[in-house]
Length: 514
Image (cartoon, rainbow, N blue to C red; front, side):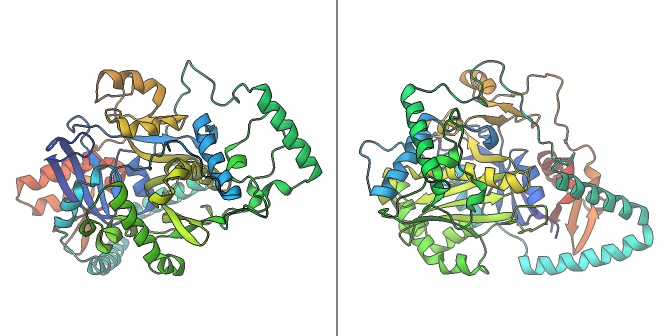
């Protein structure tokens, strides 16, 4: 089914949770009745982001705290010293029940309610959604059938072109090559600084530890992974590393074996966000209680602001249509809850979207009683490892999107510590290594990162008349629709939408007009 969106336009001058400005925020938004994973992938590669079914894009040169889309490159990722500390702390706790003292440097993936949307929540609740989704689905099926009949009679040539394009797209996805419409730019390596692909220099103490570990492994071959395996992550994906000159990999640190007498039992479960899924349904009330506890303790939300309706709308309803193509990851594409179970109870939930080229982090909530485990950092590292795992079967899935990086907000700068990472240029939508962006961000909140002054947005809206409109149960190009309209504000809204979603998405998604 095609994506169906209802554009809500520009919202300017409302409260910002990052700098406490009463009216500094500016964003454009749309309600997604349904959305394909490919369309959402293309939208986040143009600076959009979802909260529940509301999809929004900050107006970067107007908003008080510009929000830059950030992605990490997991294939080259090396855990830092502080990341390793967090992973070792977790292993010690699981093995011996040890609770390390000292301050916990925990950062949830989204410290405020899904970035922009804490303050947008009231706005989303008031949105006048002009059609019922079920009716809309039926109307759409009907109109697609009548479209097909019309097309069959009038323009077989056009249909075969579309078919060739969609086959092209599938072949490209299959081959692991991004389709031309997706513009996945491989960021150039920074000219100076450490080579992140090489292991860091190591101390003599570390080398001695490594030798000891190798000796133990020779005495007990294959024993490294015993006792700590996760239901959805087969051990064969992480063979024991036996190279003495390599530092421990992220997987070595996460999946290190636990003794049989371990103090705690721990597992991570990946559950599709769907009330038709038995596991999602059976764990719903426990997951919801955890969310309430987290929102009240960490964000000081009053109970009436974190009810079942808010939880469901915000974290359990996704516009993404689940897809399971043969070339995709085993779990399929769509929205998931990654549940962290400790001794039979959920202590954290990472909400993620699995998309054609990335795993995108949506939100994290956890039990405040376990803050000492730095679950924000731990879950981010698990999600990076999960992306690497999915990449093994689906080579084009190779990025981890962390939402928005806000340089002007100190509590949001931690996202830049997962290196190597790139920021999205807000004007040309190419990815630029974060090291190249930081000097400019020190001088100005809003920056164009692309250094080429001639460069433009390659997928900008060039032919708005080709944009697809869904109107009165029929699908038509905007060129046909506008002849029936006399309201001048209508054209301005449609052209604004077209410029924000780009030519490719405007021709694929259906813009609902009433």
